[in-house]
Length: 432
Image (cartoon, rainbow, N blue to C red; front, side, top):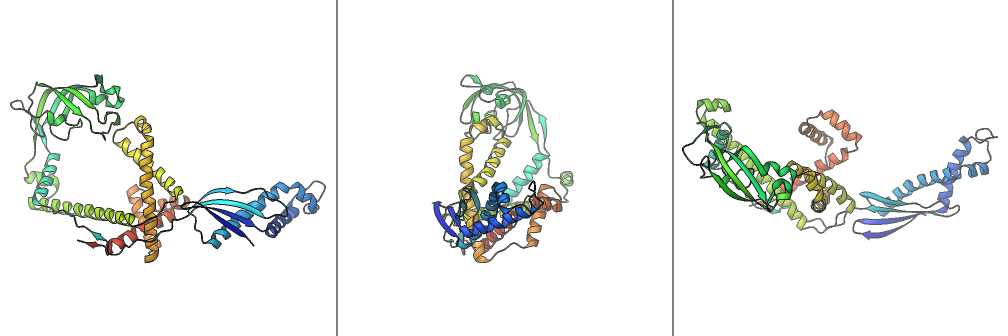
C-alpha cells in the first residue's frame, strides 16, 4: 500500500513524501521491460527474441528512467487525491534512483490554498458618498468645453492674469548646478527660450505658472521652485531649484460664447440640450466613481475581516505582473529606465504588497463563490472574451484561439466568476 507523509514547511506549503510499494515498482518495471523485450533490436538476435536478462542489462538505464516517469505522476495524483490536497503550484520534485526490490520514494513540495474562515459577506454596511451634480459643476464642465475651443490674443497693456499663455525665457540651477546634472531628461526643465507656459496651477514646472501672475512683458524675476517628492523625474523629487524667468510675451485666453455657432460645432441644437448632456455625463461618471469607491471599501472590509496566508508562489507570480505595471506607469510619467532600475528594490516591495492583497482577495472571493454556488457559464466566458477583444482591438475568435493555445481560458473563467461574486456581494450590501 502506498504511504504518504506530509510535512508542513510553512503556511500554504507542504512537502509530500510518497512511498510506492516495492511490488508496484517491480510490476511497472516488468511491464516496461516487456515492451523493450518485444520491440528492442539487439545485435545477433531477431527483433523481440533477445534473452530478457540481456535486454534488462542493455537498457537498464532507460527502463529505470521510464519506470520513474510513469510512477511519479501516477502516484502523485493518487497521493493528493487520497490526502484531499488541491495544489496551486508544484515547486520541487526530488526523485532518487530506483533500487531493485525496494520501495520507490520521492518527495514533492507544493503550495496549497490557505485554510481560513469565510468572513460574513451578507449585508455589509457601505456609506453613500455620491456627490450631487450641481449647476456649478455643469457650468464648469461647459467652461472646460469652451476652453478647448479658446483662442489666444496677444496683449501688452496689462500684467499677467490667471489662464494667460506666457512666452518666457528661463534658466535654473539646483545646489549651484544645472538641472541636467541630476537627470539628463531634466534638461528641458532647466533652460529654455521662447517656451509657452500657462499662468496658474497647471504649469509643467511646479509653481512657476502661479509665480508669473502679476508680471509684465519684459519683466525678469527670480522664482524658487520646489519639486514634489513624487515628481515625474525622480531625481528632482524633493529638490529646490532657483529659476530666473523673463517674460517676453502675453496672450489672453478668449473663450467662445455659447452661441449658435458654438453649439453647431459641438453638435447640439440648444444650450439647454448641451447642459443636459453635460449633466447626464457628470451623473454617469459620478455613479461609476461611487460604485468603484463602494467596491473598494467592500473588498477592504472582507480583507480586514479575514485572517489568511497567501501562497508564496502565487504572490511571486502576481508580483512580477505588478512590478511590470508599476514600472510601465513610472515610464509613462517621464521617469528614465535608469532611475526606475535604481529604485527597483522599493518598487518590488510595493509590487509584493499589491500582489499579496490580490491573492488573498482571490481566495476570499473564490470561497464565497463556492458557498453561493456561483459559476461562469460558457456564454458568459465568450461574452467576456468579446469585451476583451474590443478593448484590445482584436478579433474575438482569434483572441479565443490565442487564449486556448496559451491555456488561459480557465483564468478567463475565474475572472468572470470573480466579477459575478463581487456583484452578488454588492447587491446584498446595505448602503446608507
